[in-house]
Image 1 (cartoon, rainbow, N blue to C red):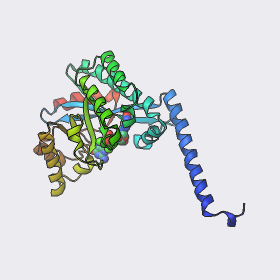
Image 2 (image 1 turned 30 degrees about the vertical axis):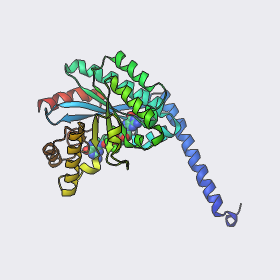
Image 3 (image 1 turned 45 degrees about the horizontal axis):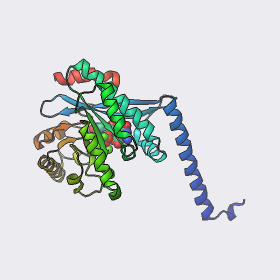
Image 4 (image 1 turned 120 degrees about the vertical axis):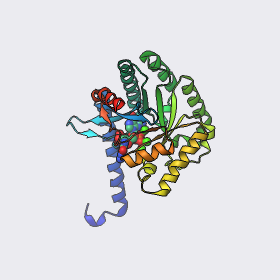
Amino acid sequence: VSRDRRGGCCFFRDEMNLQARQALEMERALHRALIEQQFELWFQPLLDLQTNQVRAVEALVRWRQPSGELVPPDQFIAHAEESGQIIELGRWVLKTAVMQVAGWQQVLGRPLGVAVNISPRQLRHHGFVDEVAELLSDSGLAEGALELEITESIFLDVDSESEVVSLMSQLRQLGVRLAIDDFGTGFSALGYLKRFPVDTLKIDREFVCDIHESVNAATLCQAIVWMARGLQLDVVAEGVECEAQLEMLVQSGADSAQGFYIAKPMVAPDVLLTIARMDRD
Ligand code: C2E
Ligand code: CA
Ligand code: CA
Ligand code: CA
């Protein structure tokens, strides 16, 4: 084929082929990664602003390539959601996180929460609530210690509303707490807070990052905390990167905070020592 005869449409077709090939390659790589257990869980502490103790840890998945390179979740979670592999990956994450934290609770001799990210597809997958119930009883995790984090996108699909409300209610009956992740970024109307059973709002980093420098940002954060108070929801602020932000959040009345300034995500063997150190300070 000569260059001249390749029109725009061929270019687009090649582009689509390339995308399809890359998606297929990704699916194969994820498949292998699941079989060969190339995934790791890292944990980031959530600081209780009232007691100044670590209230919980959030489990964050990473992909350790055979080359040793560590791939962040933003680079593969969306692919796993599209291919459906998030079901198997999410199951592994949930089980590993719950088992791990159940063990840490025993060593610490006090309750420690575990927050796990759940994609909407996972929540709606048949049998999810039963799996959670079984895991909770097998692990012996303390009642109320498991918190599932889900983004507002779950509330966008009106057709699934009654199904999702029912699933959420069943989870809460198991003593599972439900958090809205990345609160305020999901383009959904606030009305869902009235209709869906949730326990916690996690204020997105976007609102926290200039809270100490911008009156508007501080006002928004304060408004979210007051609204949450009124609705009897807990508030977690994420993405806290400096002392000034932390101070503002304490003043605004947020319940917990999470971020690099408090503690970065860490590998499992570092968690207990870090918690002991943070509890002491
Ligand atoms: P997320 O749930 O909002 O998790 C918080 C992300 O912010 C984490 O990125 C964390 O490392 C990062 N972070 C924490 N503190 C700070 C800070 O002070 N400053 C900044 N700039 N960043 C901070 P990570 O681990 O790369 O995770 C990215 C996203 O991937 C998560 O966002 C979550 O949506 C998703 N994800 C992670 N693990 C899982 C999982 O097991 N299942 C699902 N479905 N999604 C997951
Ligand atoms: Ca999260
Ligand atoms: Ca978040
Ligand atoms: Ca986020």
